[in-house]
Image 1: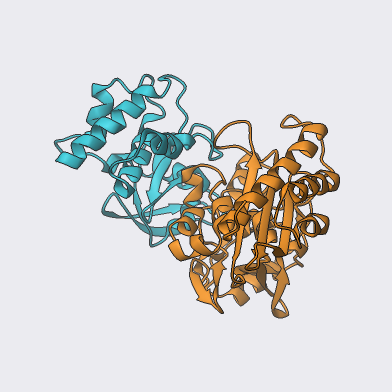
Image 2: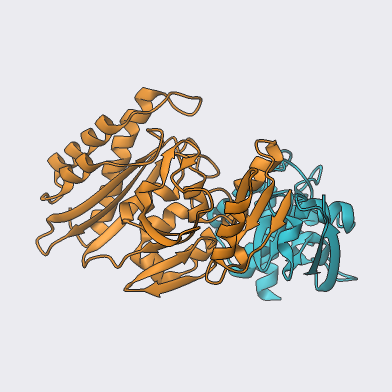
Amino acid sequence: MKTIQVATTINGDATEFVCAPDESLLDVLRNRLGLTGAKEGCGTGDCGACTVTLDGRMVCSCLVLGAEVEGSTITTIEGMSTADALHPLQQAFIDHAALQCGICTPGILVAAKALLDRNPDPTDTELRYWLAGNLCRCTGYDKIIAAVQDAAQKMRTA
Amino acid sequence: MQYAKPKTAAEAARLLGAETGVTRVLAGGTDVMVQLKAGMVEPALIVDIKGIPGIRDITPEAGGFRIGAAVAGLELGDHAALCAMYPGVTEAAQLIGSKQVQGRCSMVGNLCNGSPAADAVPALFAAGAIVRIEGPNGSRDAAVETIPTAPGRISLAKGEIITSVFLPAPAAHSADAYLRFIPRTEMDIAVASAGVSLTIDASGTITAARVALGAVAPTVMLVDACAAALIGTKLDAAAQEALEQAASAAAKPIADKRGTIEFRTKVVGVLARRAAVIAYVRAGGQL
């Protein structure tokens, strides 16, 4: 199978990789680029654990081909914190114990940030609908909602 | 598998027409990638159409809008003028999958996947949408209801792709609506669904209507008897009852884990009636 050379920007860095034509962006990130924050839960776009943003829109990276992202801009969970500080959403998830096993957490953080970028002051209902594509089997979700709302409040007043 | 990203629709059509093995067209990928993952298909060639000019654009045309085949659900939802003109179509398209899926999934992909439960499709039928098809013999237009032929089957010939869908300028005092039933609030497939588009005159009498039903037959279907139940009425109780009965009478559903024949037959009538009420009020009618 012929490999394809792809040039892209990931978390602000120009990044080139080669991939097979049928290789998902998720597999490229995890297996070729060492960016293992995005997780494979279902592999079919149902669970949201592999959420990244692609040209500003959040997507399931398991439903994107690596070959498709030539010239695109991608952000992953690895691009969320700065060198010395967690993002307010990350800190809020720790403060509110909004995770247990943590498999779903990178996807939920990327999704929550995508919402707050569009709407800095969502209602709980808007937040729950927005996160409907991120499945968590541990927390029961309430602590996730509380953490995102706490971070949103801190980000609005920052 | 080969991956190709042609720069023109003609080149995409040529590549698809020349390939002897299994092919897939890639727009948002939210169905194709799942098929690949599940091993349902092993394509010899995937043609990514997102390099074709205009394929990701929403463009005003003749008072309506032309929507490129790879425009994603959230992009429809973010387009205020389109949402104001076709609230039913844009709401239907935004019911597909999660917000992540919405970042990629397209209405044309929803149509070409051929599911009888596709959310965007009844709304497109009701709206009288016209698809533009590029193929070996050039370009042609077709009514959207001529595309699905059976579950997972569509009427396009080898080498043909849909490049855009056109939503025509609605007549004055027109509106549309789409409703589906799912047993939860999000992230599910329609058990039954209905799209309604209608036009009223100054007295509130319905002068034109199109009603499409989803998930109650092998394909989404446009039901003339439902439209006939609406036209000439002010959507009074008798007209609503006639619509509901016409929809249930037209339903030929299967029973599966998501719904029985009896349930789907009943609910599709209720959904048609409720969607008609929403469309009527949106069009400026008073009940």
